[in-house]
Amino acid sequence: MMMTKVSFPVIDLQQTGRNIERCRREAGMSVRELQTYFGFEYPQAIYKWQHGECLPTVDNLLALSRILHVRMEDLLAYEDQEVIFLGKLGMILLCHGG
Image: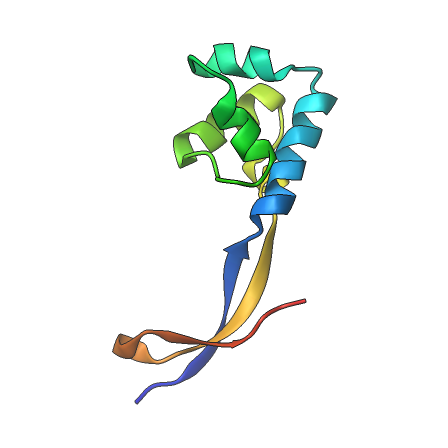
Protein backbone atom coordinates (compact mmCIF):
# COMPACT_ATOMS: atom_id res chain seq x y z
CA MET A 1 0.00 0.00 0.00
CA MET A 2 1.32 3.45 -0.98
CA MET A 3 1.45 5.92 1.95
CA THR A 4 2.43 9.55 1.37
CA LYS A 5 2.23 12.51 3.76
CA VAL A 6 0.58 15.49 2.11
CA SER A 7 -0.66 18.90 3.14
CA PHE A 8 -4.40 19.40 2.65
CA PRO A 9 -5.90 22.94 2.87
CA VAL A 10 -9.03 23.44 4.99
CA ILE A 11 -10.90 26.75 4.74
CA ASP A 12 -11.43 28.70 7.97
CA LEU A 13 -15.00 30.00 7.60
CA GLN A 14 -14.80 32.55 10.40
CA GLN A 15 -11.58 34.18 9.19
CA THR A 16 -12.76 34.09 5.58
CA GLY A 17 -15.90 35.93 6.68
CA ARG A 18 -13.79 38.56 8.44
CA ASN A 19 -11.65 38.91 5.30
CA ILE A 20 -14.75 39.41 3.14
CA GLU A 21 -16.09 42.08 5.48
CA ARG A 22 -12.69 43.83 5.74
CA CYS A 23 -12.20 43.87 1.96
CA ARG A 24 -15.76 45.13 1.46
CA ARG A 25 -15.19 47.98 3.90
CA GLU A 26 -11.79 48.83 2.39
CA ALA A 27 -13.45 49.01 -1.04
CA GLY A 28 -15.99 51.44 0.41
CA MET A 29 -18.94 49.20 -0.45
CA SER A 30 -22.03 48.56 1.63
CA VAL A 31 -23.76 45.21 2.05
CA ARG A 32 -26.71 46.67 0.12
CA GLU A 33 -24.45 47.57 -2.80
CA LEU A 34 -23.15 44.00 -2.92
CA GLN A 35 -26.71 42.72 -2.68
CA THR A 36 -27.60 44.77 -5.75
CA TYR A 37 -24.46 43.69 -7.61
CA PHE A 38 -25.28 40.01 -7.07
CA GLY A 39 -28.98 40.50 -7.77
CA PHE A 40 -30.00 39.06 -4.40
CA GLU A 41 -33.50 39.90 -3.20
CA TYR A 42 -32.27 40.02 0.41
CA PRO A 43 -28.81 40.73 1.93
CA GLN A 44 -28.79 37.61 4.17
CA ALA A 45 -26.37 35.68 1.93
CA ILE A 46 -23.75 38.40 2.25
CA TYR A 47 -24.22 38.60 6.02
CA LYS A 48 -23.83 34.80 6.20
CA TRP A 49 -20.56 35.04 4.25
CA GLN A 50 -19.29 37.79 6.58
CA HIS A 51 -20.30 35.89 9.72
CA GLY A 52 -18.57 32.72 8.54
CA GLU A 53 -21.80 30.73 8.34
CA CYS A 54 -21.19 29.70 4.74
CA LEU A 55 -18.96 30.40 1.77
CA PRO A 56 -19.88 32.08 -1.50
CA THR A 57 -20.08 29.74 -4.47
CA VAL A 58 -16.95 29.70 -6.60
CA ASP A 59 -18.69 31.92 -9.18
CA ASN A 60 -19.73 34.40 -6.48
CA LEU A 61 -16.28 34.30 -4.88
CA LEU A 62 -14.68 35.20 -8.20
CA ALA A 63 -17.22 37.98 -8.78
CA LEU A 64 -16.69 39.25 -5.22
CA SER A 65 -12.93 39.38 -5.72
CA ARG A 66 -13.38 41.35 -8.93
CA ILE A 67 -15.79 43.92 -7.53
CA LEU A 68 -13.64 44.40 -4.42
CA HIS A 69 -10.44 44.53 -6.52
CA VAL A 70 -8.68 41.77 -4.56
CA ARG A 71 -7.51 38.27 -5.36
CA MET A 72 -9.67 35.33 -4.29
CA GLU A 73 -6.75 34.26 -2.10
CA ASP A 74 -7.10 37.57 -0.23
CA LEU A 75 -10.65 36.60 0.71
CA LEU A 76 -10.04 32.97 1.61
CA ALA A 77 -8.37 31.98 4.87
CA TYR A 78 -7.19 28.43 5.29
CA GLU A 79 -5.01 26.15 7.34
CA ASP A 80 -3.02 23.23 6.07
CA GLN A 81 -3.70 19.89 7.69
CA GLU A 82 -1.18 17.11 7.42
CA VAL A 83 -2.71 13.88 6.17
CA ILE A 84 -1.51 10.50 5.03
CA PHE A 85 -2.64 9.66 1.53
CA LEU A 86 -3.34 5.94 1.24
CA GLY A 87 -3.64 5.64 -2.52
CA LYS A 88 -7.06 4.35 -3.58
CA LEU A 89 -8.14 4.01 0.06
CA GLY A 90 -8.24 7.78 0.56
CA MET A 91 -6.69 9.97 3.26
CA ILE A 92 -6.48 9.99 7.04
CA LEU A 93 -5.89 13.07 9.16
CA LEU A 94 -2.58 13.12 11.02
CA CYS A 95 -2.68 16.42 12.83
CA HIS A 96 -4.35 19.80 12.61
CA GLY A 97 -2.11 22.68 11.57
CA GLY A 98 -1.70 25.56 14.02
